Amino acid sequence: MTTTATHLRTIALHWEDLHDAAGQPVTVGAFGLGLRGYLARLDELDAEQAEYERHQAAHRRSLERDPIQLGDRPVPVRLHILDTMRAIEAALHGTADQIAAAVQRTPMPLAPSSWPAADKERRNQLARADAADPRRWRWTGRRRPAPYTALWLLARVEARPGPFRALTEQEAALVGATAAGAAGRVERALDIAAQRRTLAQRCACGGEIDMHGGEGRPPVAHCVGCGRIWTEAGVVAA
Image (cartoon, rainbow, N blue to C red):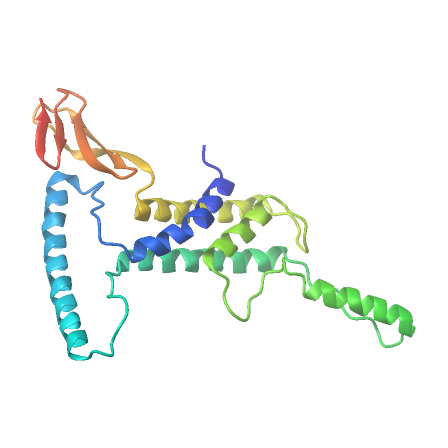
């Protein structure tokens, strides 16, 4: 069983891969579409690529007319990857906000003015250090990137030292649900997880059709009744 900690590490480790994938040429991820859906998606991508190439050609012509415009040519941006990254960041930040509000200890107060000077200075140094503890979650200022947030939540799940109490079962379940959903989005976007699904459609023999895919492999359908196998190229065994 995959743990919350594993999900959070998956997000942190593969975040840079999502950044890279957002600017890479489009590949077809067709698991779950069915073979007809896969071929239809290919046609859609051909049309999208043709439209993109028209825009790129126009851009290159504008650069040729202006010789001072130098540098790299633009690359395709995979908007669905960017949308995935924004959704993951929003989910992680929202969960971290909620968890920190519940488990993060209030900073130590400054010493009362009535204390002796030496004692007051020592207390105030401790109070300032406590308030500035880098392990604290911050609600204001620049938002932390998703890998930092994932690792901050991981530290809470693993009860690492800091100005926090331990998570309750309900709080741990909240982090677990967010981590599982976000890690699943990462794996689907990068096609790094093996997937298997039984289709609602049945084979002509009446048997159930299982589809396998993911981990960079094209989808393959297999009838558990008669043994027929389909790929995007058609029936390959019967």
